[in-house]
Length: 260
Length: 265
Ligand SMILES: Nc1ncnc2c1ncn2[C@@H]1O[C@H](COP(=O)(O)OP(=O)(O)OP(=O)(O)O)[C@@H](O)[C@H]1O
Ligand SMILES: [Mg+2]
Image (cartoon, rainbow over all chains, first blue to last red):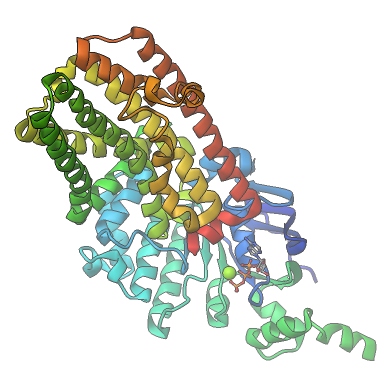
């Protein structure tokens, strides 16, 4: 039985999004919808097109073709308006390393026009358990510490739409667990829609309501993590991932059918 | 344009400068070295030639100080951008609701603050060290200063566009670009002393009118008003061209998907 249609507001939508780099399609007619309050995981092997998708959705890279809408508005024409309501964090970007943590956060709070910014920063830092890092030099933080500082930046403007590109990369299991819980908690409290990529299946199972598997820019399968595992007759999401990465598709189902 | 966003970006540079005093030292170091060398040469020549020639030699000092203003303005814009590249902050800025115009304005303001510091230091030393009073240029200084700053901003935007397009490989251009113009904008000599074929080229650039005007003012206390008009007019043209180039390159990098590669490299 197909799942009932999601009636929540669509806050992010890609229609036939295609992005070519030198003739190679990093994204190939990729379509999806993200609803308010939903966490959508984007999975796939290295080079599958996850980061390219996010970059297109952030307006950093223009699509070769296709349509992108956020909050019901065409993305390119309303970039500034949309970015004011969204935010982004990645393990691969950094805040200026030569400033103190609080200085960086204050600058971004001001850019986003956060009211009561000092209080807001203090609250978020406390929530991510990094209050003690406030006066440290940003560039001297460990990878895990700076990931959490980046997350504070990402939550500063109370985004309705959040894009997280491998937020738990380089975190130790304990901190990764804490980060997942905080993301989930804030997401539920504020009803945020999150687009989430990760290579950590634990992350995906715990955080994502729904996932999309990409292979060479195309959707291979999608659904709740539990459904996908059930569908594939694999034991867990990690097995599904490995199958898709190697075969480019989920072979179990067709096999089963042909055997009947 | 949103003033709050511009002020936030400027605040970031102020934090940066307050945290690394070396950046401030750099603002004063080269100008002071230049000034002392040129100042001493001037004194040497003045002592060993007739007074009329001696007064001409002061043109070098004036040219040097005004040149530095333009150079600092260009650097202010280009280096502010490079700071964001070096610190891998560019992506954070581009995914924030910051318009290109706001970003550029912030670098302009930083450029202006930088030249103010340099100008104060240079005026002070030239007065006490060499009795060259920049204020002998009296209120002419204000339009001189503004026009050179505007051209410095244009050059800064062009440098930024080149870095955006070619990545850090183009970084050295940030320092070199003003010097492409130094030979043709008549900083240390008159346009009429230049080879005939190069004179029309010289008049295409706003600083030429300012440097010519500076020598007139030092000689006779006044200058050709038309010069200021041409300089300002050309400056508006160059600012528009440079702004267009910057936005065009920014869109090109978006199209090619270079922005992210570049920003995270
Ligand atoms: N600017 C670019 N120029 C050329 N090719 C690019 C560019 N950006 C991405 N690609 C290519 O597009 C494909 C998708 O890359 P992308 O970064 O989206 O993968 P990903 O799914 O995020 O992988 P990973 O898990 O390794 O982060 C890759 O083959 C990559 O080489
Ligand atoms: Mg990626």
